Image (tube, rainbow, N blue to C red):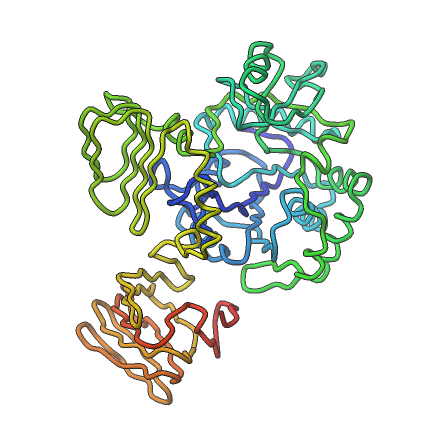
Length: 477
């Protein structure tokens, strides 16, 4: 797709995706999960932009705990990034985009930004590219463009955009109004009228125009974001916004802060197989179905079951006589609900959070910048983990106040720092790390290092880590 003006993709990747629990969790949310195929929505969002001329390297905005996940997933699909901007605290889309606009404008005052959530699915890439070509012409003329999804049904889970007059010589329309999520009857009226679109949360505008609108409608937000960028720190490939200044920033969306107030909003209709994968039923809608209209992922055996979404991650799931249900199985949780009730999974997440249950935060397999660890079993005074260390990776030099550790090498080679000693271990060899002894694990080899770690002690929480040195800029937890 040939586009005359250069533009900068800004990919917003700060959400937690609680509506897709138990697969989506705080430390590994839906935008990083392979929900439809082997690629995550975040990876698909980046790859969707390939083939467009005059596109700059993307700016990614995410939170602190996802920073290495973003970098690794981009690397796996051969995507170079301009910068990974780290939000110290969530403040919604308007401040995040403001920081990106400030950074982009410093490099090029005439920068055009294409703002995209990281967790959307778009099946017709060609139609999406055509809509960008239409939008950039309007953005170059000082308009703030939003992409309105041509509705395929009366949906109550989306906000709507009412279009106004058609812009002369363009495929765009003036924005007459932004409408909150309607009742089903009102939503049907919107769809029947042909004058309403689903609000996609995707935008295109010049950095300068967006900042000027913030100056008019949200000056406190702009000031806080400007100070946060000015005081930011560069750390490896990450641009860390200043915590204190960003925390003082008002919390708001692009819609509320700017789009509903500006006189220069226009909408580009987009009919491209779009989904925000905001629920399990949405994944059923867009998934490949079998002869009984079931969407199946993983090891599943069904009898007399139809119109269901069933996702088995770790073991066989069998179902008999079900209709219009969702079943999602992970290594530590199982979620079952009628498709009509899947939105209420948020209430389950809230209750589990109130109980301080770890199942809302992380899976048994947790990814780290050096590799991953997977909890095999947990008991009162011991737990067992499978640890995988990437070739050449080095863990932090650390110690623990409450636990000792036994390491047994399964495959690969380990270089172990244990107190003042440094030893090299091969397959089937082991070592013991006493409580309070500083230690470090490295993989000097060219294949992944796998080991079994047996922890024992009075307290086994992840916050019993005192990091003495760390290549990844992490503080003690």
